[in-house]
Length: 473
Ligand SMILES: C[S@@+](CC[C@H](N)C(=O)[O-])C[C@H]1O[C@@H](n2cnc3c(N)ncnc32)[C@H](O)[C@@H]1O
Image 1 (tube, helix red, strand yellow):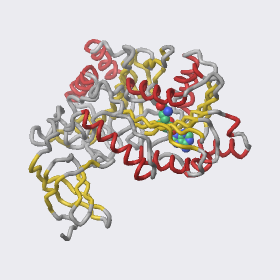
Image 2 (image 1 turned 90 degrees about the vertical axis):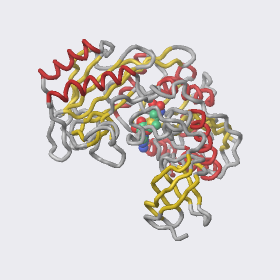
Image 3 (image 1 turned 60 degrees about the vertical axis):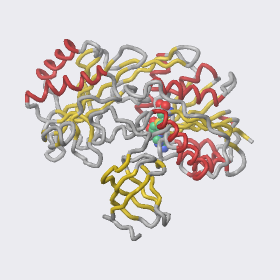
Image 4 (image 1 turned 30 degrees about the vertical axis):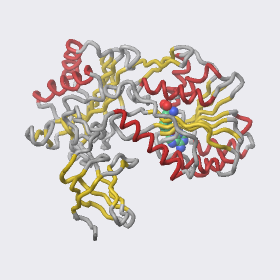
């Protein structure tokens, strides 16, 4: 069959890709990736992109549903790009994510790995997020679903995938708590009838930009952060009074300001309207409760309960001992460093973002921790310096790595491959780059994979977090 862009064909889905797309393999061996389909689905699809080794297609008609399909609970499903897996029961999501990790280590890493235990699932597969960012938009789009509601020029919700300025007006997001949905709807109901202007990326003017809600899962704190272009004292006071009266659970309200052209939900400046201006989140490190101060722009893992499980796996793999000195590379706001500090002699966190390092130092003080050090540096420079001074193996006994999705720079893998730390614990939100990097680290024969444990931080999405332990040979 001559397959090209526009070709329509019947497909029976046999698997799911690492990006969460359905996979159909033609008789000629061409692999086609199709969004919104799961194994067992039969569908008519249309090719949208054809490359020599693979193709992409869109769903035209679902002819026969897979037996595992369930009805997505969310009204916005299919338009919002947020949780693509709502049509898969949670247990099937976990099995699929397990396969992604196994495939990455076998195919990309080329490893003959020990059996990988089942993915550690999230107790809450909905309502688990502690942070949601919603955008305002006046670029006409449909309320809820196109067939149900007319076009609107006032939306507060989530971006429509592939449409830069279009925002889906969201009434209820299943990833956040009911009280966060109340804040979302009250905010829309307050500003919309008043005709308050919305920031436009075309004219670079307009008042309303973003609404960010952060909710601690282990304390009662809730932060509301309204990002506007400038300040309107009377309007903000009226809105603050409405929130105080109707949603007293909000403990702090911040009005941030951004005149930036980039649509990033971070203010250049901010004013605390009421409350402390931050929330406190708690994690238990099996010895005590640790407190984390979260300001509007601080990073914190978005699934608090799973973060505790993830860090516990990392700590168990590390087997911390009282004379250990541990590097926590890519430490962010230092949560992992502080989580393990009670069990080791010293922990040294290294990170590129200055605000994150400042947060880490502040959290160290709040928790009366005195054996953690936080260093602002690019990891590549830090590792190279330590290595060229001949110090790297003396400076620490064990390492934790938690890089961004893109993984490690090849120079870092090369240096690590020649070291002889007792243990390297590599935490990653991308098993593909993780498997690639670990193959490079193990290539000199100094390390081998000892254990792997995937943890699901993001139910209803295709994302999976994975922890891998390398032991010195
Ligand atoms: C996955 S996050 C780590 C999160 C942290 N371990 C936690 O659990 O809260 C990755 C971190 O790496 C930092 N980062 C990215 N590239 C870096 C680099 N080249 N050098 C140092 N840090 C970097 C990012 O700023 C981010 O904080």
